[in-house]
Length: 329
Image (cartoon, rainbow, N blue to C red; front, side, top):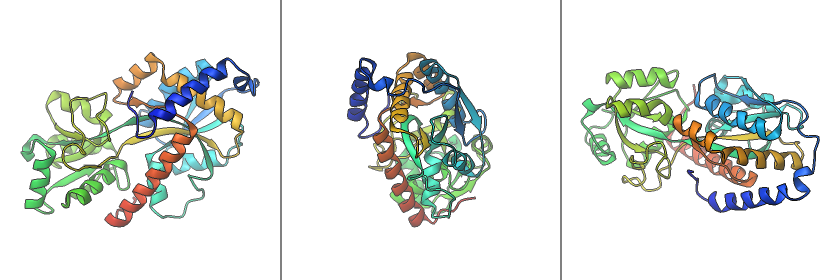
């Protein structure tokens, strides 16, 4: 299982806590919860990586909690519509949010929002992550990160890179690459990954930091070259592809991650029960296999892990947005 920095030790503690709960009264702190279906709100459309993650985890989570976990898609405004819905929901554990990297990017943009993602929601658990993969069309004539950097330095503004839209993880992955490599690739935003990857496959735009789930089939077919994954560690879905960091840009890291959050007024015992149940679901070989087949790594960990990760992500994106001047759609 892929693990983010500082999660492995906390995860072991979390698993020990779950085992003790199963043998003590803390699991039974609220035997009445859940007594009805739980709604898991996703701020992205059906078949997106957020939606796929939510449906795989929700099925097993429902089996553990003995109540259905129902997915409700509320796409729009880079997940802000879904987030506001959950922020305003009762804190009873029956309305949860699939939060993501988009939420921390939105927070870092400095725009006025009707909620504060960090303080108006209670972290439950980090559930999954998938890297972006730096891919290039063969016609560009580069086969490594260093060769791409060399080309970028030799020909400023010559290289175009596609993304799924302004302010998205693929966009900001490119801006971070520009800053750390001291080059200037030109951003070409599209309205979604499928439209972007189509033009990358044709060679019209030769570079993309593509979600692994979108890129992996084209890498395997040879239509695109994979130079590196953007995560801090190699991905289980493509273990032979090096990271950007180990390819010369030390410390580079971005990923598309998802976590579950609840309204901030949700009782602690309900949050604890949800956290333990989510971690149990992520330990299922069935769940891990289904996620991996989609290019997604299962994570897990404590509520505190997710809280710290959200803060570190928010700080990172806010700094990058200020330095790069990146704008939202």
